[in-house]
Every structure is written in structure tokens, then in C-alpha cells.
Image (tube, rainbow, N blue to C red; front, side):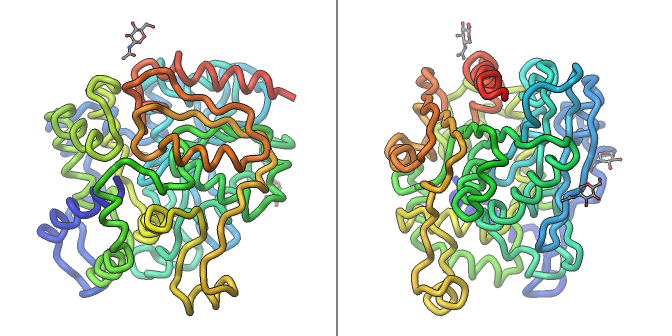
Length: 414
Ligand SMILES: *[C@@H]1O[C@H](CO)[C@@H](O)[C@H](O)[C@H]1NC(C)=O
Ligand SMILES: *[C@@H]1O[C@H](CO)[C@@H](O)[C@H](O)[C@H]1NC(C)=O
Ligand SMILES: *[C@@H]1O[C@H](CO)[C@@H](O)[C@H](O)[C@H]1NC(C)=O
């Protein structure tokens, strides 16, 4: 998906943007506040409301927190308070996927947003934002607009630094001993990285539930990323030479154009792009949720993250970022990047996948399940049309997935 969309929008992007300080920075054409434009244009309101505004609109009190990682990134976390007190079980961390954000857990509205359903069921939900997305584009010393060093991260850093900092912070505020974790797509990758590199965190996770899990990517069915992955090194160099260390950001045309097109023709445009990349089947997500969803998607990622995923596809291994022979020797002390050792993830794990997901295939999941030492269940949603995003936005996600999540939380209550 990643590389395919990358190429399409790279072309689009370079046509419309002008270098300010060539070759390193580009001017964005979006004014900072787009709401005054979107409202008169007739955009569906929930498309452009942010997390706090959405939660407030639907009557859910929320809080905004800042969490600082040990390497200086400032992450924004939204907490939806439980509708009853005291809260049940353990605080729930909701970890979003690639170029997505905290909003993914609520934008489908009060009846079908997992964030709200958790709150209704007395859980304390924390929807986090990993470094680099629109809410977490901050650092104590580095400026994301000027310092390319800010963008020198992939899911390796999300798992190695962001997640531990988030868990420590949330445990401290809630005075609990452990958390539940629900990850979608890259949110699961981040978790597997943490479990491999920081196994001391196992004891702070009561249970994790991984939706559309991504670790090994050898057998993805999406053909275009497969082809482009072989050239990931060159593509990264080209993008960074052109000034793109960050792509698919909220202030870039790669967000604005799809957002607009999906207001007009959600099924024809967004549905088709999703179908070509994830295996999405028309109708398995409502056109309303597609239209709103794209307004919350494509909100920023580092080029290095996409390149790291491409490396997984190309190498067939789940391993750390390949910096090249010299770079690897310097960073890891070996010429090849070390593999992530998921056998160190001793906390209980539930995997939930779908039959028609081109990015999270049974063959790749088999490699993962055969190595996880504490796999509670490997659940495949019995719905043939389901693909990568249905677990969060899909029609009937409540019955097919969220109720299962609630019953697992109940089971791991103490
Ligand atoms: C959400 O939008 C409101 C209104 O524009 C703004 O005041 C607030 O700062 C925004 N929150 C975040 C986290 O961007
Ligand atoms: C935990 O919270 C206390 C008070 O709110 C603060 O002083 C302390 O630094 C926090 N510890 C961590 C590890 O965040
Ligand atoms: C959703 O569930 C209802 C009944 O539970 C069923 O009739 C309907 O076909 C389902 N829709 C999809 C898209 O799975």
C-alpha cells in the first residue's frame, strides 16, 4: 500500500509544491486552519473536527496529555474518560497504524467507535499518537520543519522509545500496575518491536490485542509495494533529495486532495485506492465512514518508516532498519541488521486478522504465531470480505471485533 500510494502522490505532490530552500524544504499550500474553507464547501463536519472536538460533540469528556520520550519527542495523547466509576480492569492504550492517528478510534461515531464503546463499558481509554503524525510533530530540541534529524525514525523508534514512554506515563497517572494494549496495523508492529527490544515491559502489559497484525511481510499480496520495495533505498534517497523526509502529512496535498475527492466520491475514489492496496471490498466500510476517515488519514509519517516496511517486504525478515554495511556495523555491531526476537514477548497476545487482508496474510501470520510464546488466540474474522481497515472502521466491527475485545478484557481483569 505504502509504496504504491507513495509513488502516485509523489508525482501529484511534486507538480504542486515549490521548493523554498531547495533541496530541503517545500512550501505547503494549505493555510493553517482549513475549517473556514471546508464548512462552506459542504464537507461532512466530522471529517475536519479534531479528536477533542469529536469527543466533545458526542458527549464524551476527554483530556489531552503530553508525553516526552527519552530521546526528546513530545507525543500527544487523548484520554476518553470512562462513563462509569471506578474504571474497570486496566487502562487501554489504543495504538494507531501508519499515517493514521488517535482519531481512527472514534471518527466512525458514538455507536461504532471503539474509543466510545470502551468508555461506555467503564474502561479508561488512551488513544496515543506516535512520533511524527500531526498531533506528535514536536520535539524538545529538533524542529520538524527544519531538522531532517527529526524524521530519522521508523517503527523501530516507535516501539523502542514511544511505547515505553507512553506506558510509563499512563501507569503513573492512573496508578495502575499494567495496561491493555490494542494495536492496529503498524500499531501492532510497534508493539512487537517493543516486546523484542524492551522485554522488561512485558510485565507492564496485562494483555495485547493486535488487529491486522504486521510483522513478517514476505507474503503480502499487494503487488505494487512488492515491486517498489526492491528499490526502496533509491526511492528514499530520491524523496529526501527532493526535500521529503516527511510524507503524507496533513498540511500536504497528499492529504488535501484525497480528503476532497472522498467527500465527492467516497466509493469510487477512496474505495478503489483501498481495494488496490489492502484488498478492500466495496460496502464492507460505509461510504460515510470512508469519506470521514480519509479526513483523518494521511496525517504524517517519516520516509524512513515506509522504507523500513519496504525492507521487510524485500528481505522477508522481521528485523531492524538496514543502514547498509557500514551503518549497521556502527549501530548494531554486525553487518546485517539484527532480527526482532518476538519470542521475548511473554505477555499474553491475541491476534485478530481478516481473510481478505493483502497486507496481513495467513502465511506471514503463521511465522508470527509459531514464534509468539504466549499466544492466547489467533482469531480470523469469519467474514470473507474483510481486509486491513475493517477491524476499526468496518460495518459490523462492533459485533465481530469490539465485543471480542471486551470479553478478553473481562477475562484478563485481574
Ligand atoms: C482542536 O481544534 C480546536 C479548535 O480549532 C483547537 O483549539 C485545538 O487546539 C485543537 N486540538 C488539537 C490537539 O489540535
Ligand atoms: C509520576 O508522576 C509524578 C507526579 O505526578 C511525577 O513527579 C513523576 O516524575 C512521574 N514519574 C514518571 C516516571 O513519569
Ligand atoms: C452485519 O450484520 C447483520 C446482522 O447481524 C447482517 O445482516 C449484515 O449482512 C452484516 N453486514 C455486513 C456488511 O457484514
